[in-house]
Amino acid sequence: MDSEHAVIIGASHAAAQLGASLRQGGWQGNISIVGDEAIPPYQRPPLSKAYLAGEKHSDELLIRPATFYEKSAIDLVLGTRVTAIDRQAKTVTLHDGGSIPYTRLALTTGARVRKLSLPGHDLDGVFYLRDLQDVDRIRAYVGRGKSAVIIGGGYIGLETAASMRKLGMQVTVLEAMPRILQRVTAPEVSAFYSRIHGEEGVNIVTDASVESLEGSGKVAAVRLADGTRLDADLVVIGVGVMPATELAEAAGLEVDNGIAVDEFARTSDPDIVAAGDCTSHYNPIYDRRLRLESVQNATDQAKTAANTLCGKLEAYHALPWFWSDQFDLKLQIAGLSQGFDRVVLRGASDTGRSFAAFYFGGDRLLAVDAVNRPKEFMMVRRALTTGMRADPDKLADDSSDIQQAFS
Amino acid sequence: MPVVTFISHDGQEQEVHVPAGTSVMHAAVDNGVSGILADCGGACSCATCHCFVDEAWTEKVGAADDVEAQMLDFVIDPQPNSRLSCQIIVNDELDGLVVRLPATQF
Image (cartoon, rainbow over all chains, first blue to last red; front, top):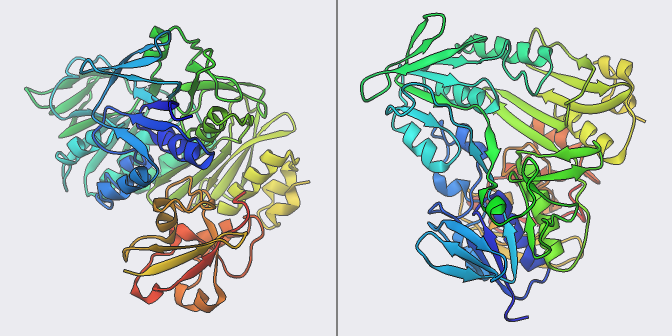
């Protein structure tokens, strides 16, 4: 076994889990994690939240300290970009011309931001938000009283808006669709977040069509198609991500809206596994292929991939779940709401700051968006994992015990 | 530096040195203590860092806040001394703390 070498490409959340799980699973060979950023794998969710707001230091973002990898004999090859995979020679090529041989390969390359090619997109002060470095750059532009325009009313945009309000900034969120969070939530949830952001002083503009970013050298304003001009000391663009599949595609691996993997996290090459945002997989709970952008998927699929490499085949069938913190709102999401035809509310979404929206497809509960409702989140996570059924009328009765709604 | 002892569900003890200001969850993850998953990284959002505080320490550790308490209602085998370890911050007062880990986090 001494000559075995597992090489993990992408020093991501999935990579940190995969490396640790390989050792826990008894992998005796070498392990290398190769990543283009200079620091060990870190938590991305706090980037738009506590880290942007200046409440966390970068050391606190590390998933595990550097010493953990040393003790676990996991070689971190940082500041190093993989440029190619040679599946015949079983080597990966590095940007500096070097190469690393592997016996088993794991792709945890994550996702890249979708870019907009607006006039003025290359001005100083225009940012995307994905990496630690992005936020470090953004932080040099933030400050009390300054103006920020955020393009994209999804979770990243709204979290960024909340963090910048905390910093005392004037914040506008521009959303191209008729409502924020349109792609991922019910109208009631969008209306709730619009109301709260309004109450917290964020200016939300929907149906916004951005024409250009203006300024000489540095961004000064955002111009909309209707002629509106918004002052901007900085612009953050958050319009989604795309799976980083270039290496896999170039190596001839099957790609289907993400690197295609089976329930054991295997790609179309039996010596190569993949996990996290870069993959797509079949999910038995929802009976369709999914590409998930979440810590849960990165973590759970990485464990499956590690088991596979250790020769222990255990199918991945976890329930997707997510969270988003904005202001004093803790949103916890269990399941996937896509395809819902009915929403049941528990608690009021048009007043106050605590309610849950249950998504049904026919009589089947698909998901919950729980705002400051940890009980509802936990209950649905359990119910969807174990196949319990939910009674919509009892769910809507906020005075009844949540457990009574499930059987 | 305060010392925290983790006892796994099958009785294995692991002592770790924890800088003050670190959460019990991070102390476990940073030292490779299995039994704590901490999927959300300490945001009190996932309830996968459930632990049982040794009876001798429950008073010093204190009680869970409302959000944490609601999450704890739904962990596997909740007990009066259940806590989410991401919400317990180690300080000199907690030097010697003993926590037990459940057989499973969910």
